[in-house]
Length: 497
Image 1 (cartoon, rainbow, N blue to C red):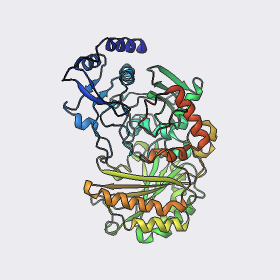
Image 2 (cartoon, helix red, strand yellow):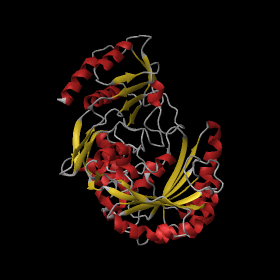
Image 3 (cartoon, rainbow, N blue to C red):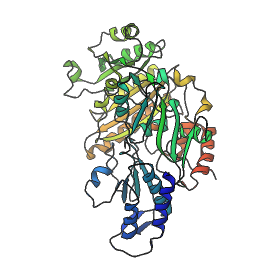
Image 4 (cartoon, rainbow, N blue to C red):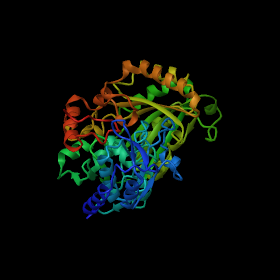
């Protein structure tokens, strides 16, 4: 029914004379960079064919709708389609293809690369598609692509359940899952994409299909790690897990004690059980954070995370971490998992300038620790955060490498520098510092990257995320499902020749 209705609407659109010269039409950009004018009659027919709202540059709220999480991204699309449902997505995909438009897909708009908005083209905005359905008996949930991990955690908490995915609650389910899905339950329950059972997807030819463990398996393989290269996911079906109260938080040390603290954290991780997903952070305390004065005088080295298991056992597991030093502050406490999902939100607020670099570490050596501490002591912005994420031997590494297109499952630590600043005139200094930091870290980094954490860094970095065997397999899959590369604004995999 959905597909039939969408096809009727597109047939109506095609009856409009596209060559009609109407000065009040819209100016848009094609995928080839050509500027074209779409007449008013065509846009009116398109508007009538969707339940959602079309937003043009002269419309109210246009500036708000085009904004994404990263203020570095300041693009002005020619048209935004705020989809109300699957039929709108199909119509919008067919419209974009028929007119060769540059196309961006927006979920939560959280990607640091800013690929969910484009300059002059069309944005298919899924952020109003926020349906969540939970089956607490089967421990399964189905969600739409506009949902964030905070939305999911709030709904699941009522049933004592949780989904693996997301360190920050404002991150979108769609983008995070398609690129991997690191989060607070990753060591116990795997990546978000490891918990994916099936998806509904609209492909570049406007077809609506389902891919899962028992149908369209090759496409399902590619979706789990291949980002949005193969179509627009309109529904995700996940398995979820019994997680109610967790032990979450951080222990905080002044950066003067940072080397010994990080050396201790490295050793602590050698025997930590998979119920504990943790990391180490370097940041400066916001003035409003109620901490001892010594922690407001200089940078902080913090170690912590979430223990998702029996709480008394968690107290014993975390005792060495919480007693080491001792820390200047210990903010671990029992909390609902939905609260743990939000505890790092203050470090990555929306609307600031962001420039990130990331890669897996071959090992967290003393020399790597020295380099991290040396550079962070000279960061040009007080908002910048450096992250070390512990993976190690866990549910992630137990999934066979060939099971999904996700590239790298066996590195112990992921390194991420998130440079964040307030004003555009600070951009040059922050970007230069980040690149210099990155260059100094290269001797310690693997030729492997988690794509969700990087910007527009070129095809070689995308290939490094998968390895060439997987990349070539993905390129063949791209040729089958998106031969014209309609879905190109992402960590793009070019169709095989």
